[in-house]
Image (cartoon, rainbow, N blue to C red; front, side):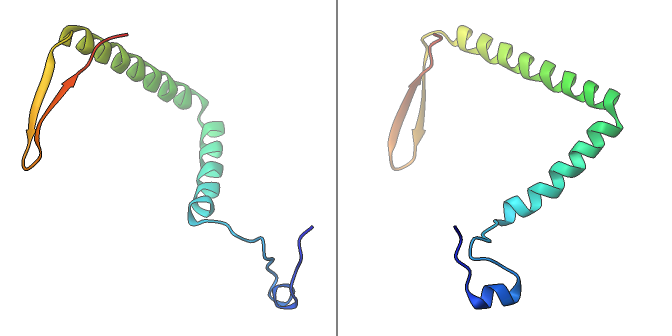
Length: 91
């Protein structure tokens, strides 16, 4: 149960009113997005298909890069720290 002080009742706020700026901005953005999705279903489907295709292409491309790199060791130098060696191996 929430306890309210006399001043919070006078101003119409409660002690649990702790919304962040992100949530305050996200709520109208979600509403606008839902309206746009409902208004343009064909465009929404095209965008979702394009994003899905791009995501899959990126996944396959990165997997190919890792396979080609094999067990090569990548080295680069950080000034004042030394040489860093990185090995990326596929699963």
